[in-house]
Every structure is written in C-alpha cells, then in structure tokens.
Length: 79
Length: 457
Image (cartoon, rainbow over the protein chains, first blue to last red):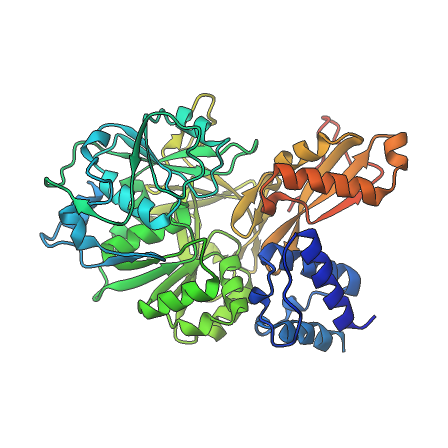
C-alpha cells in the first residue's frame, strides 16, 4: 500500500473510532478543517509511526497545514 | 493589596480591555459598573465558586470579587456536575457565580448569582474588606480535582517587581484563564494592558484573527497549543513581539518552528505549575535551562534539583491544598516538588518527563492510576499499566498494556476485548485520558514490594 493510501485509510479509520465527521480528503483540505481534533492527529501520527517505522515530525522544518502537506511530509521522508 | 486597588493605584482608571469572543469590556467601565447583576455586596465575606462557562464572565467576576469575597474558587469549564459538589464542600463555598452556559452547577446549593459581560450600575464605590484567597483546581490521582490555595500576592509575584512596559501590551493566550497558565496572563494583562480571551467555542483560526484585529503584541500557550496554531495555517495572521510557551516540555522542534514562524519575536519558554508558581523563563531559544539557574544566590525563585526532580521555593508558591485529608504541598524545607524530572546534559538541564508517571497530554495532566482503575474494572482484566508515549502533536499520549485473567477471557478475540476496554474508557474518562493504543500482554513486572513497576518517563 502506498504512503498516501495508508494515510488516507488511517484518517478514515480514526475518524470512525473518534466518532468525528471527516470532510472529503483532498490535497488542499486544511487539517484543522478536516473534522479531526488534536487527539485524533496524535493517534494518526502514532499509528503511522508503528506502520511505517518513522516519525517525520522529528526533523520537519514546518508544520503541515493541509492534507497534501501531511502526505508530502511522510512521502518525502520515505524516499 | 487587592486587585482593583492595584489596577487603580495611579489614581486613574485602568486603560485596557478584555476582548471576549462575543463581547468586549473596557476595564475603566468597572469603576462604576458590575457584571454581577447588582449583587456584589451579597457576596461580601463569602466563599464563592466562580463557575461560569464563559471565560470573560469568569474574568470579570474575579476582578470584582478580589478584596470582597473571603475566598474564590476558579472552576475550569470542564468541571463536571459530578465533581462540583465535592469542590463546593472542600472549599466550604456558600455561594456561586454562574451564567447561562454553565454545566457544572446543576447539583450546587447556596447563594446563586447570575453574571455576564452586560454591565449594570455598581451603585457605590469599590472597597476592600478581605484578603481574598484564590483557589485553583488541578487534576488529582482519583479523578477528583485538587484544590490549590493561592493569594493575589503569590499569583502576581513573578511580575510585580518588573518595570511597567513603556506602552500598553495586548496579550493573547490559548489557555483558559481559569487555569494557572491562563490566569498568569490575565493578571499580567490587567496590570499592563489588554487581553484577548480565548473561547473553547471558537476555532484556532477565528481566535487568531480576533487577536490580530486587537493588535496582539504578546502571546502565550502550551507547546501543543502552538503546534495546533501552526497547523491551522493561521499563525501568520498575528505578529507578536513576544511568544511564550509553558505548561509542557518545550522541545527544540517547537522552539525552532516558532522562531521561523515569528522571526521578529522573542520566543521564551517558562516553567510554571499551579502548585509551584512561576519558576523561570528561558529566552535563548534552546530547550531546557542553563545549569547556572540552580542555586543562584539572591534569586527570587530558589531552584533546586533533588532526586532528579525540580524543586522550587519562592513567593510564587501556592500556600497549600484545601480539603480534609489533603496532602502537604511543600516539603520540610518549604520547597514544592514539581514532579518534573530533569537531567544534566552539557551544562544544561533538560526535562525528561514526570515522576510518578503523570502524563501531560497537551498541557492536561493524566494520572495513570485513574485510567488503570477504569480498565481494571472491566470483566476479564487482571491488571494494567498505563504509560506515556511521545507525540509530536500533543507532547504525549496515553497507552495501556493489559493482562487478562487466565481462562475464558484470555481466549476471546483480543480485538473484541480491546474494543470493550476502549468503550469503557470513553464512557468513564475525558477524551485526553482514553488510551490511544491498548496492547494485551502476558504479564507486567511487579517489584519485590508488590508494586507495579512504572518505567521512568
């Protein structure tokens, strides 16, 4: 599964678990406008670290603002 | 010393304003008007719970009640109807101030006073009759809040000796002003300018836009608040001269992110806690603090490291905990043990976590024992260990390891058992206390003294 597909499915899974209404995921959707809260993002980042084996926030220069930024942060780290 | 008296000490009314999400109040108007519906005098000499939902309403009430009430108790908005009666009892409160949105007050007794930012004539001059005690609430092991007693002097000691700024400041804070970190900012703003009061009902972007419109110059929050602001994409709307972090470990990553987001601002991280008060502020942009702060002679705040944890002794320390069977707040030498573990690395102390395993999720304390109690009450659970896991979003998150009772329970599908445990946690605990991950493990380490071994954070 690609990094993007992994992230997309985790967003959907965590939204279901946290009973939050997820906006349709597009690259220009802002993370804070996605319907998820900080705890949901903390959960997504923890699960991604378990799945992918890295936490790109460690070395990130800036915080991702949109869903596209978030995916790119993980994709650029995997290369 | 009383708050209104010190705000008007120059003989002129205070010039600043409190900017709420829905209303703005100019402090000068409080000279002749009141937020308490003409009932300020009925609260004189009483112990008053300030239990409004709206933070601006709470801010106005505490300005008016200092010097009037015998004691006031600042209830945070997440105080539940279950917890409120115990807070009322332990603080010996006989009155409460509330507003339309307040949820915690349903079971309360005593004199009820409705309050709000629509001011009404005061009818007489403000006068001081009491040295009002200020009581703040902080998380406790059993889920019941602990009551921490301060005075106006202890709450303002960190800045009363400082020179007044040459021009008024406009403060903003992500903190709720009824928690210690937010109250510090409210008190600074009242003395030196204005405050943009945050509201839980407002998005980060809307709050930042409102702060920008008010011309915010100084801004405070926890590292988690700031990460959220950076993620909102709206941080660029504000251009503060001073950015302050407190309430959680400020790691190098968030300090660097804020430096690059606000190149013209001083980025400072402060150490403070409800019990210990403000410890120190670090402005060199580096995580941790210089070892030279320890044992500095003549310092207003004495800083000490004992057994690996930070201890503070100063005029900013709280007085004590309130309530029957309350534990001691200070040790025999008058120091407050902060429970924050530090380690010396290359001439600098860095924070490595909390002793006793207390987990700090986005600035909110979680006691592992409280979560374990909920998990252990589930049928089929033998024991559990709740611990912190590092998170770049909230600083830390809660995780749990669970040992099942041998036999039928252990043979059920683990996903079903985990689902049941999570469901019970969501029913019984605030969202930040619910474990993010649960692992079923065969055993947990127990020390020779029979206690669960808690790995150092």
